[in-house]
Image 1 (cartoon, one colour):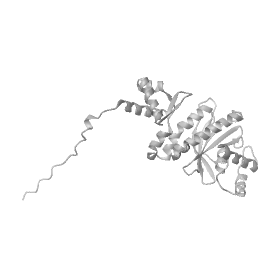
Image 2: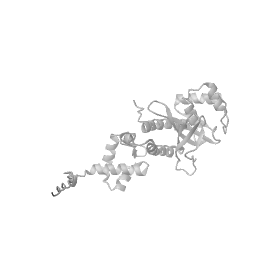
Image 3: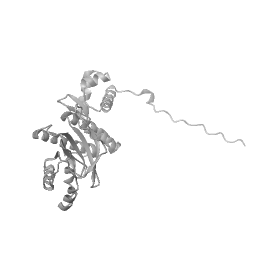
Image 4: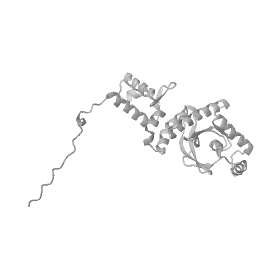
Length: 273
């Protein structure tokens, strides 16, 4: 008997629409705009976006305005610039890791660093012993303060330490014992330190005025997860006397607002609810 012939190989039919895809120009332009802003890593004006991407100015403006209305982009009326919005991150949040989220947070940190001429840093705790610097953005000025990512500090130290200290739940004896082990550049008493911790909880940001490092002032605000736990602090580091008391308060409020944005960005919280 002859062996039965092998069955003919079957090929999967190509989708009927494969050769007739209709490209929707406004969608293509919108994607090009989003890719451009992502790669640039900084806000941009509509006229510059249109010129760089070869899009009609009126068309570009209408696309940008639509993306702002849908919370995909954010518009700064003072600088007349556009940048990625929290809504865009929420849209793709389920597909990205926290490390990638931190990268997305950098433009927001960079923007505040530029606005106030400070170095903006992001800190997270390691247990209840140390905090570590995980991200840093320096202001584009002639003289600035460089903060190396990866450096560690005692848990209670600096403006960030004051923010984290407010949620530890330690007894006064435990807190005092840990505080006494810290070597401050400009020492302060535990009672003064604790008053500043309580003040920070009330106003939404903490201040270290030269205690951590002589000649340096730092302001820090909390970044909370979905449960309300402070898991990061965002800090502005500047030269002492760079701002007067009112100016420091303005920076503190801006950092608190940025902390709320980062809470949404990193943990999908919604501070408007």
